[in-house]
Amino acid sequence: MIDLEVTGVHFEINEQITKYVNKKLGRLDKYLPRNARTPAHGRVVLVEEQGQSSNRYSAEATITFPHGEVVAQDATISMYAAIDIVEEKLKAQILKHKDKRQNDRQAQRTRRSFKVFKPSRDSQVNSEEPLE
Image (tube, rainbow, N blue to C red; front, side, top):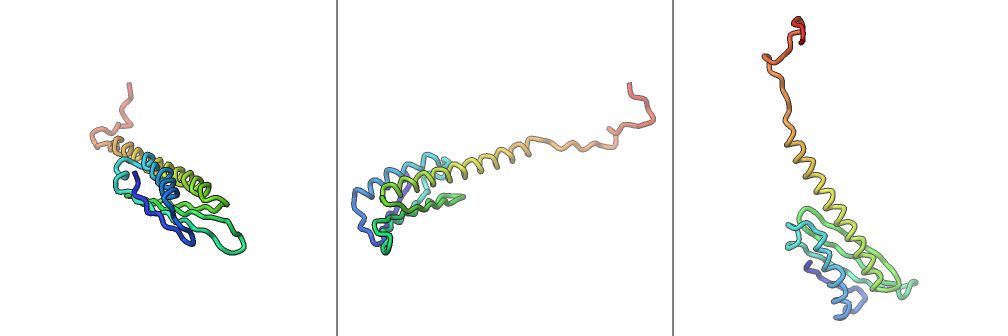
């Protein structure tokens, strides 16, 4: 489970919202590479925007892990909807990052497995001799 730090700006964070954030964003660790699950850390900022657009909430989440960081932000009328959308954005970014790293590793393995053929002087074919 990702260690999450939940903060509110112009918004009182209650236990129900904290549980919801931990439930939704805490389970994203199953999409992280295995070696990055334990040291992963997340920061979630929930904001109630004031001004002309009353009743508008935004959620911003940052998950930091070895070899990467993903950030997502969204604003909607409902705090829970904003958290859900941020979760989907983070999931997509983590899967993209994981796929990219796996492709890089596979390419490195492939390059290592191919041996470069360097012909020696003895193995060169003499053009004057007929080939049979």
